[in-house]
Length: 318
Ligand code: CP
Image (cartoon, rainbow, N blue to C red; front, side, top):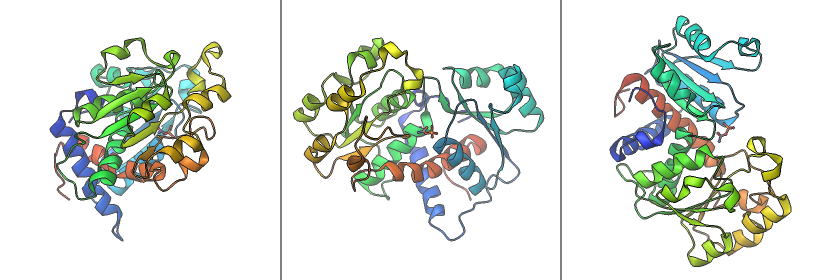
């Protein structure tokens, strides 16, 4: 795998290999010495044009655990604010010897442009581009589901027959798109629930079922996994921003809806959360919530991604 731009480009075998390598990396995290020498001498650049807490920090931790050198670049405070282009920024990083570039950008397709451009000879990893994709988030979500539902030793397995209901601001969600493609590849059944104004026009072409009413969707059958999405107010025109009380009442995972779920249903959220809007604190902090596990698993999945992109191996040679 030269780059990781989208989950739609992953075959089932390639996706399961990444989940299996993530298991190997999670085993390293459980050791007293959490470091592997595998990427010694390699340089990973975190190129972030949009804000991030989890993704940027976990890519940094992942690269360091594999003994790579890490350069953190944030558009704020850089020459981007003086008008420097993506091309000139990439060529500057290339001159500094970047072997892999982890890029988050507000423009959908920016990582693909960088990978195709020839401006830089490095593996490109999409850390979230506009409303397009966030592939490592979907991989860490799938890894978390597989561990919780099949156990930590479930190498070689997909998510066949697992029912996943994704709720909320689908139209602006790169997490939803990456999850839909990956979950389908791994054999899961995906249902999207949202008000019509927060669904993409082309959703009928996606491999999912759609419901506009959360109580109806949960009443039909309780899913194995419910994934709540953040309302992305920063990407919305004010006219489309739903009334918070109405949204919470109709589409939020309120205390009442959470109590009505079986104790076996996993509650997921990619973070950051709007507590009290799309998810209640009781649901977010409950034993069936995997929210902090998702963050912890993110380091293992990003180690696996960096390892695969930078070595080309499909299994771990420490
Ligand atoms: N889930 C996620 O991408 O979080 P950050 O924006 O904090 O990286």
